[in-house]
Length: 263
Image (cartoon, rainbow, N blue to C red):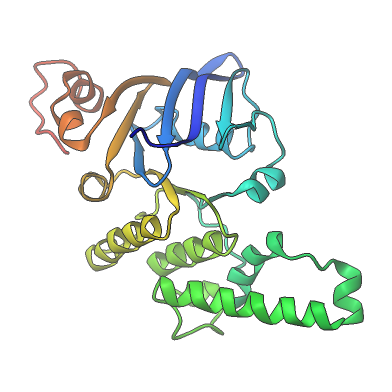
């Protein structure tokens, strides 16, 4: 039985100032999978992420999520549909506590607005307590529950990455986009991240990630999509991608390059 397609990109194209960043990229992500989007620096990976999440508008092509066309939809609407993300450059509220940062992720699912907060109505208090429980649970999930009141700026760089993941999970996503989640992590933290990503999928959340750490990619991803100069050059299992000549050349240059394969 075929898997349900959760995300579908068709002929996605985006230029900046006449420079083609992404050209006619098409691929699907099936529900319950972990897919890696890889390629050399400047391949267009983050541009694809920003198109999916509404940070950029596509010049051409379409993006369907769970059967709905989200091309050009506002970012807040995309989040409400069930897409969450982390960023290559950490975007935490550095002076706020870990718990407060994750609570910010809960906001998109809360019904109470400014007047509810001012009046402190019973249902609003219940919703607030529920949000705190959710935030605390996500901190525990990523292993940061021992210091919920510590300011984000005081966490290690690797743990700030995990805090971003906890905040994204607090939005209750169907689909999680991770942009360089292992950046700045040591070996121990990276091993923990592999486990956490697998557990995220076990919760029924589909994962799409960009990552330069090929060891992590090969361990956690079931399928890889490879970009080079904005063009999709390969798609397949990690084992198949490792042997794909076009991928090897994209990373290492044309035949005759004496460097060792790095993935």
